Length: 345
Length: 295
Image 1 (cartoon, rainbow over the protein chains, first blue to last red):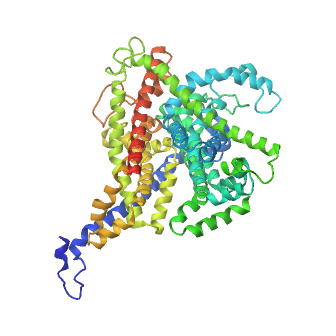
Image 2 (cartoon, rainbow over the protein chains, first blue to last red):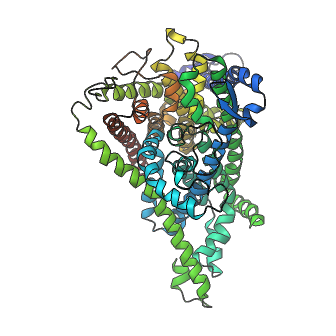
Image 3 (cartoon, chains in turn green, blue):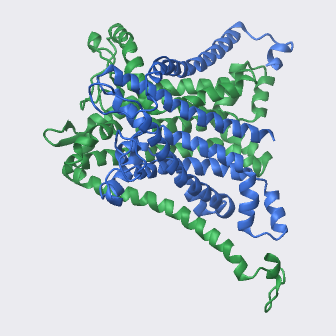
C-alpha cells in the first residue's frame, strides 16, 4: 500500500507518503501520548478525590490528627499519633535489620561468591519478594510471633536498663512492634538487595583493580573503591525499602496488635497507619467521620511514601547514572562516575 | 582473588589486615545466609502445615461453607475468584502498560513529557497497595458504579493500577534492548512507524515482554489490601464479576483470625496454593527470559 503513495502531487517528493497513509502513524503516536497523559491525569484525579474525602476529618482535628495522641472510636476522636509512631517504629526496625543484611547479600553475591553461584543466590533472595504479604502475616502470627516471645522476654529482662527496650519483662506477648518490624525487614530485604546489586554492578572494574593492585585485601577493596562509589544508590535502595515498609498493610495488621496507643517499649502492642485502614474499614463504613479519618490516614500514608520515594529515586538515579551513560559515551561516563565518587570517600 | 593471594606480594599483608579481611568476608557470607533463613522457614512451614490440609477431602473441589460450626469447606471459589480477578487485571494492565512503554521508547524518548511520565510511573511503583484500594473504593465502590458496591471488576482495576507501573518499567527496559539498527533497516525499506512497532519492535521484544508481564501478574496475585476495599469477601463460587467474589488472599486473611483450628488449617492450605501459583508464574517468567538471553 505504501508503494502507491509515491504519486507526486504538487511540489511533493515522490518518496513522501500521502497524508492518508500517514494517518495510522499519527493515530498511533497521538493515541499513545493520550494514554500516557491519561495515566498522569488518573493519579492526579485519585489524589484530589482522596484529599476531598479526608477533609471532614482533617477539618475537625487539624494538626492533632497527626500529633494528638488519642484514637478513640467510641468517643469519635481520631488523633493519629499512635498510628504515625507505630509506622515509624516498625519501619525503623525494618531498616535497622533489613538494610545491613540486604547490603551484605548484595556485596557477597556481586563481589565474593563463586561466579556460578551468583544467579542462584540472586534468584533465591528475589524469591523472598514472591511470597505474598498475607502469607508472611500467616507465618508471623502462628510461627514467628509465638517462637520469638521467649527470646524477647529474655532480651527485655537482660537489657532492661536500656530505654525503650526494657520495661516489658515477662509481660511481653506475641503481637508487638518488634515482630512487625522483623516481618517488614524480611519483606524489604529483596528490593534493597536487588537495587544494591544493580548499583554494585556499575562500579567500574578499574576502581576495583586499582585497589587490588595497590595491595588491598578484598574487604579493603570493597570498603575503599566499591562502597563509596555505590553509596548513593544503596541509600536510594534503602529508602525504597523504607517506602515499602511504611505502606505494608496486611502483614502488619496481623502482627502489630492493633492497639491504638503509643507503646512504651519495643515489645509493646501498637498500630500503624496502614493497619488501621485495613482493620477498622468495615466498622467505619457507616460513620462518615470515622471513614473520613481512615481516608485521611491513607492520605498521610500516600504523601509520606511519595516523599520517601521521590528522595529515593533521586538517590538511585544518582547511583546508577554511571550505568546509563556508557551507552552514549563510555569513557566520559567512567570518568564522571569516578570523580563523583571520589569526594565522598 | 588470585591477584592478591596467589601472586607473591611485595610486602607481606599484616596479620591484622588479614584477620579483618577474613572476618568481614565471613560476616558478608553470614548475612547472605541469614537472608535465606526466612525463605527456608516460610516454605518449610507452608509445606509442613499446608500439605495436610490439601489432603482434606474436597479441599480443592468444594467452596467454603462460611458457617462457624461443622465442615468449613474447601477453597474452590477462592482459587477461581483469584484467577478471574487477576486475569481481568492482566487484560487491563498488560496492553496499557506495553502501550505506554512503546510511547516512552518509540515516541517520547528523552523528551520532557516522556521523562515526566517515567518519573510518575516510578513514583507509582512505590505507592502502597492499600492506597490503590482506597482510590478505587472512593471513586467506584462508594458511588455504587455498575449497580453494586463491592465487585470483582473493581478489584481487578485496583490490581491493574498496581501492576501497571511494573509492566511499564519492565517493558521499557526490554524495548530499549531492541537494536535501533533493526528499526533503521525497516525505516530505510519504507515501512511506516506503526508497522515497525507491530512487525519489528514487538516481536523482537516478545519474550522479554512476556517475562515482565508474568512477574507483574505474580505480584498482583498475592496482593490482599486492594481487594479488601474493592471486592470484599463472598463464599460462593461465581463467574459474575459485578458481584462479591472470593479470592485466595482474602480467604487466608479472614481465616487467620478465626479461632477454629480447622479454619486456620485451611488458611495454611490456601497459602500453600497461593504461593505455588505465584512461584509457578515466577519460574515460568525466569525460564522464558533465560531462554531468550541465550539465543
